[in-house]
Image (cartoon, rainbow, N blue to C red; front, side):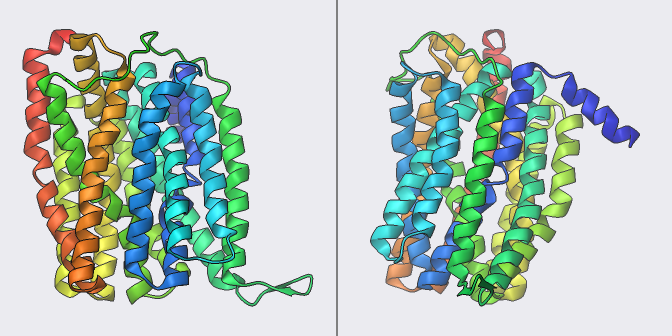
Length: 419
């Protein structure tokens, strides 16, 4: 109890805007597992096609990159926090659109993915922008550690609860009406909308200020930012599979949504505590150790999946995936903010310029990974794509470590006065 009280004091000592962002993200983190895990499971259970899930994910990423460009125009007229809240609400509404459709075909899947991409794009880009201006480099390990803790925590609780609910609702009678599994998905999205509204209420309490410079659109950048865009491409290449692969593999080898939620929950229990502790005690110079550990853990998980390609391999992959994601993000996002701090002062540009182009870099990587999966699945089959494309992108992503180390070294040795 004394330890919990001490952590609460640390939280209370943060600035008002930092606390507002953390509470908002804490609430919306309850919705993210539904968007990221069960949307893919919904498509898989209604179509039995792994390729359809990948098409959905690709359309989602197209929506995100379009939003990144559109958001720059909206910020000239609206506050970032307002667009941020709009993205939160739109995420839940877009999810409801897919779940309440009477048919699930490729057209509906692609359209739903595109709109969910638009909504999550508004959420993520404005989240990064507000975080950039509300935190400094010294406090970002705590910020992202706290955030990752609750992302991991809800990635335990929500999949367990939702998975158990979806696994038991089919055949249940309410007021004489026999419910199907898809009715369960619809109920879940309504709850997600209510939580999203609560997150917007929390966000409204902030007093955010961003740069007054509204010149966002540039095509030429300092070499340091070009290098970071290459790093973002490597991250994006794998990121798509963090959403699609777990649902596809678990439903293929281990059962239904109940098993998906159980495995996701068990695998995340250790990670939730780990990332919070690392966020509290790790120094900025420790980030590359955390970054490298995450990369190698994910590679090992994809290697197990490729060699075994069975229920045991899926469990091993899921454990490594759930460990990798928060470790990677805990190091990656502070490094991104540190790079933006340096480059924005060198080029005297608004921070959103770099957040926007970062999404473009991520999209190039995401599109490469998704298209690679679709091509391999078309030439061979879904199993070959699941088995070997995951391993290939994880192996390529190992290049992220020396590149990130080079970027940090360049900032510290050449541009430290610009931070």
